[in-house]
Length: 210
Image (tube, rainbow, N blue to C red; front, side, top):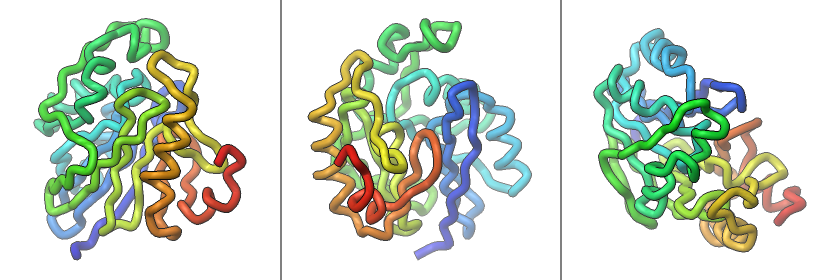
C-alpha cells in the first residue's frame, strides 16, 4: 500500500470542497469536483510538487463541475463521471449552470464509469459507488488505501444532501447512504462536497436523517 494523503481546497461562492487524493510516492494527484477557482487548485498542486493526473466528479451540479474544462487544459488530465450522470453534465439547465453559474456549462467527460467498478489511477484504487438521490448519477468514491470516501453532496456531517433539485429523490438518497456508505468501516473518513469532514461511525450514530 502506497503513501496516500488527502487535502482540500474550498472554492467558489457555495464553498465547495475540491478534494485532492495524492500518491505521495509518485507525486500524482486525483482531483475531485473542481467547481471553481482552478488557478488556486493548480497552484496548490504545484506548490506541493504534485502532478494532476485525473479529475473525478461526484455529480453534475455547476458548483462541482464548473472548472473541469479549465483544469483539463492546464493539466492534461482526463475527467471521469458515472454514466447515469451524463445527461446532467451535458444539460445546462439540469446542472444548474444557467441559474447559479452565470454561464451555460455543457461538459463531456473522457470516461463514463459504472456502479461497483474498481478504478486504479496513478497507483490509487477507488471503488465507484452509485449513490443517487441528490442527482440521478450521484457518485461516491471509496479509497481503502486512504481510509476515506468522497461523498459529494450525498452525506454531510449530521446531514444529507438536498433532494429537491431536478432528478432528486429523498428515498433513493437515504437508501444509497444506508446500502453503499454505511457498510464501509466505521472509521472511514467522509470527505463531503461542503462543510467539515466526518466519519461513517459518527453519522451512523448521530445523523438525524438516518
